[in-house]
Amino acid sequence: MSLKYQELLAQARKSSAKMSGSDTGSSRLANLGRSSRGQSRFVDEDDDAKLGGIMGKKRSGKSDLESMSEERDFMSRAFDKVQSNNEMMTAALREQDKAKAMKSAVNNLDRDTTSEGDLNFLSSLAQSESSGNSKAERTNKDGRKFAGTLQFGEARLTDARKALGLTFSMEEFKNNPELQEKIGAWHIKDIDKAIAALGDSSKGYNKNGLRAVAHLGGIGGMKKYVKSAGRYDTKDEEGTYLSDYYTKFSKI
Image (cartoon, rainbow, N blue to C red; front, top):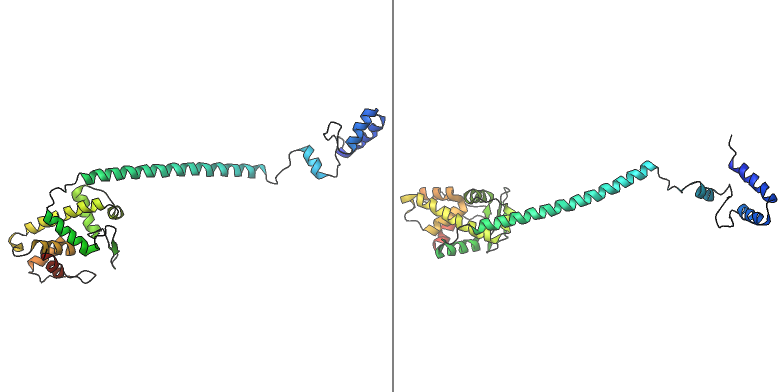
């Protein structure tokens, strides 16, 4: 059976009496817990702090499993942070590419054929709709949203996307004045085609007046207005009638 630490210490103290002078000096230091070389040979068996220093590294109170778990958590957080940064950079690059593609597509839209009269009408319509504020937006009681200088709704923007081969959200539309301008030019040309398709039915009506009616009530509403000789006269949420817009814009 192995000797206990206390028994070993007792034997060492007994042996110190038989040592030479220099050995005795070292032994006295040892009995105080120090060696002549400045390192402990023996320590007080009742001093847990010193005994722990000799027997092994002082523990933090956490198990090896807990420590390993914390290290894994730290590495996971570091990896997640790097991955998140990479995803953010990738998303930013995609947005830049998307913006470049949109700018290229908008630049390719035909705006040169817009006449001075068309531009004057669009300018007046923009003042009436939003005071010329490209970032203007509103939401009707039924939840429909409208944005831009001409206050286009989602339905009309969908028409524009299909006709022009573009992909954009209403938010992107609101923040892109050049896109708004070119879609406005397409909007008027599209309305003019619908007016022309009415043939003789549209004779006697002011073109700008019908354009304004179509903008307020949609192309379908404009056709009903003409074919009913003005009896179909619905109004928007703000109380503006089709006939109000017809009269107002016929003066341009």
